[in-house]
Length: 189
Figure (tube, rainbow, N blue to C red):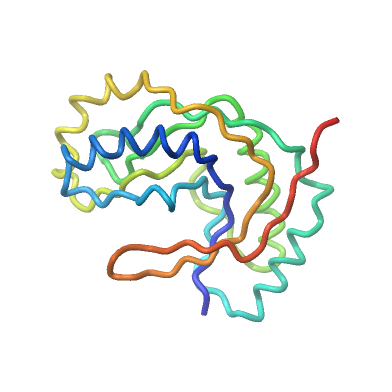
C-alpha cells in the first residue's frame, strides 16, 4: 500500500518567507508538531493507502488535463487556526488570491477520484498550507493571543502550474513527501 495524496507545490520564495515565521512559532510553541519547510504544499485530495496497481488508474485519471483550469497564481497570507481557535487542530497559512481556482481544481479532482471509488471529504474544502498540527488543544491556547499579529503577514505569491500525486512515507522523524506523477496545467497565452 502506498500512502498517497494529490496537491500542488509552493515556490521556494514563499517557502522561505513561511520558514522565517515557522522558526519563531517553533520556538514559542514547541509542543505543536510543525511541518518541515520541504513538506509545505497545498493538498487537493488525500487518497490514503492505495494499492500500487491503483496508482496507474490515478495517473491516467489525472492525465486528461482538458478539464482543469489554466495555470494560476495563489497569494499566501496570514496564519489561521482550523477549524477555529476554540478547537485548534491545524495551524495553517491561508490562500487568498487564487483560492477560487484552488476550490475549482479540488472539485474537479474530487469528482474524478469519485469515479474510482474515493469518497469526497465530508467538510467543504478550504485552501490552505498546513504549518503545524495540534495534538492537545491546550498546546495552542497561547497561540490565540498572538493570532491578530499573524493575520497581517503576506508570504508572497506562488504559481500553480501543475498537479502532483505525492507518496507520503511516515517516519519517526516525520513524513517524507515524494512526487510520483506530475500533470502540467495549461499555460495562458
